[in-house]
Length: 275
Image (cartoon, rainbow, N blue to C red; front, side, top):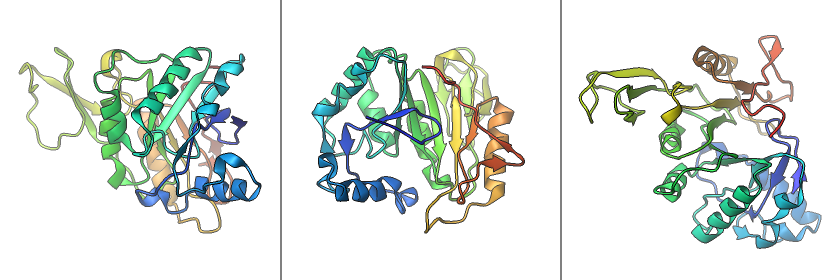
């Protein structure tokens, strides 16, 4: 467990290390670079390098030893839902988060399909756990549909590194029976379930408690010596989509480390400063 410079969390909690690359956003993975550095420093947790996924049971109860309410980024050096992480170990992580009720835990994944499958059929959700997916370009948008299938106290999307324009789709939901279908393209305006009229809105901040949409949007350019370009219009468009939907928006930084977008720092998160 360590303090982090990540703008939307206070500490990281790494019970899993190592990962494999699955999409464009992984090309210049910061966790891979950090793993090499920690490995060279002789830190045992990272001795196997980045390419081997390892679970660390000895790290599971770290948050329980901290009484002060804290916002944790869960497994910043890996992916909780990587295929090499056993279901039983994910369950152990969930049990600890349930016991650490004074804290807030943010679980971010690119493996959204497994997250949705793992959570399928589980009763309720932990009120202190937020679930998120990384969407670096339009090709990654299906991860949002998986996220919407997950029971969660809150949902967020991280568009970092932002590698292209992203338009969040309309979201169909039935005022009568609550049926939600987030990714229709051609559809008449009646519900598949009850036949009543449906309502279309952005999947960002759908605005109903039973199956609300995305509660927060975080975005940022790629950083580092090999950073790929990020067009200011991509950032502006995401900001506008979020503000139009009433969803908190955070712009983390540009490639040069500066944070301003159109003359101000966008630093909004729904979870605020306190857990």
